[in-house]
Image 1 (cartoon, rainbow, N blue to C red):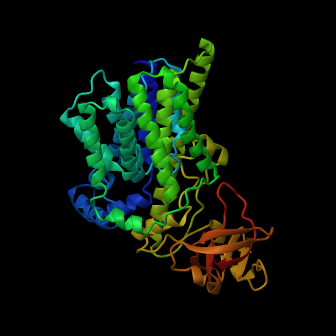
Image 2: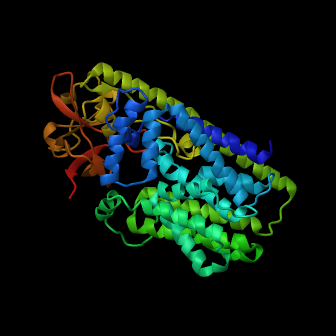
Length: 502
């Protein structure tokens, strides 16, 4: 097996295992509908299909919604793991073919590293629904572009037309971006528009159009405020901006070194990256970072290897081996921690079943920051961290109420003996935990994503989503635990006051 394919197979296999081990998360619960407790099969799929039809009416009409429900309800999780591994390999292999990379080229390793680290996987992307929404369109688009521009002769076959239509229907942001790329090619490189390419492009446009047939997407658009087209200088957005603008620089630098077909492809990819970036800046939806960054990476992969780079053979080998080892080690670490999180999920699930409606005391396992960074932040820092996770878990296991998860430090304690954080604040600090009186927590109870202005003892302020967890202490008195711990930090800073945010 050539070195390129061996590396791609290892990465694809690790992604497959990672996806197989990922415990159910918020969108998984959503797409299963009312099928909890029903064994995997056609009966479960029928119940899940009710949820899909509702998504078409109030959310979006993506093909990915159908695929997510089919995999969640009809097949065991390992089937999705195999599919995920296959899709990952297709993206890596056909991406290298699209850029015409030699089998032993350093650029093959660069492409693998870009796929693992430069694209915003982060912790949510391994969820089945997110993968189908973002990874799968990426792989199909790469395959369609390969059929259009990299094969010796672009030929129209029924299955390539179906692949193009499915690639456009999987996700509207990807579809619109590629359609903008097709339009740019039509205007700027119209001599490269052959009949087979036009047929594939029309099939893709038709698939993209299906996203807008269903009313749900228009309802979502009406409820989404359009934002100013300004670049937010946050770490993720800064990285994203670099990838998009770097691709804009790479195209003119490599232009005279590209042949006719790759020039056309570069125009398409750069236009797709720019249009996807514009959509992201208008809507401000965080998950939209994938599309412009993906097209930017693909554009640089096509352009940069064409430049006349000069380096010694030993330097190329050193960089290639180091990058490959780092990539495989990162994914292996991710698999290790995902296995820990899956075991933890099953443990919390077991305790909830035993406790019924009562609170459970459990300290989620926290992944150290250094390992979190090495894993590319694609694994959650800890399970059940956020309101969404507790809410969706509770919707199935806790009679529709959020999961009532309390730290072990509160087990058997008497909160009334603890001092107040500030006079008349209604907050007490005990064993590293912030506990509120029912009166203080009342404005936040029962409100999903209730926001509060928080004042800390060092004088700093912060606006946070507050989700009080009611419980009874050893004296039989009612209190509400509020999780103020910050991500990646073990210490909890002393909280003075919380107020309803206006």
